[in-house]
Length: 277
Image (tube, rainbow, N blue to C red):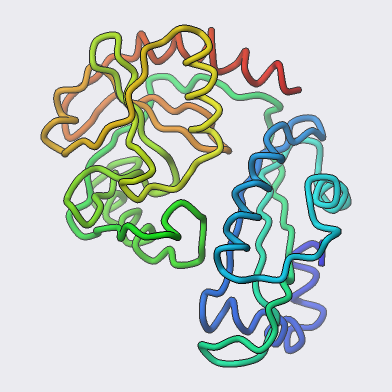
């Protein structure tokens, strides 16, 4: 189904609850959050690659018709020119922990955005590290699932402590990711990020930036990092599909500059996007 979420559920609530049984009761769901620019979805192929890999890992019977052209058409049916789009996919109803039907169902929702481009956000955000949450590391860590209560708790902790966002540690007490973003940092001229083996989501924006930065000649290293080690970083920024590249100006109470990050944003990140539009 590709519908407006509000009108769909208000028209037939019992049927909607039946169809979303496995999403509501078991979190048997994957999702992608995408950004649309003037009707274009430049990273839809990357989103579909991650989603289809997750569906395969979870044992869904993916319809042959599904793919980039299919979802491009479905999104365009309801989407305003500039928007935040969420594509949610769950297993058909039936069964308890063991499903009875592995065919997927889907829902597309869209929220209008005012801008048709990424913008540098000055001065950036305040960031801390969650004390309350640890993220597991397993086969499914790289996908976006409804098992998001840890991210919710971390976001609540950030709000309570007057941060804009919080980094979350993994089960080894190393930095994993933020509540909805991957994390990058600078050690002099070395651009660093957490490897996927640390349990972070395989962000499409993360992958695009790594490829573009490498092509532009930046020296890059994917490596584990502790909270203590990250406190000595020269600069820190976050990436995700909606906000793009988000600089951090205060980390754990320590002010940061964003000279290298702004240069990367303007000379590499935006050019990479322009080439896709």
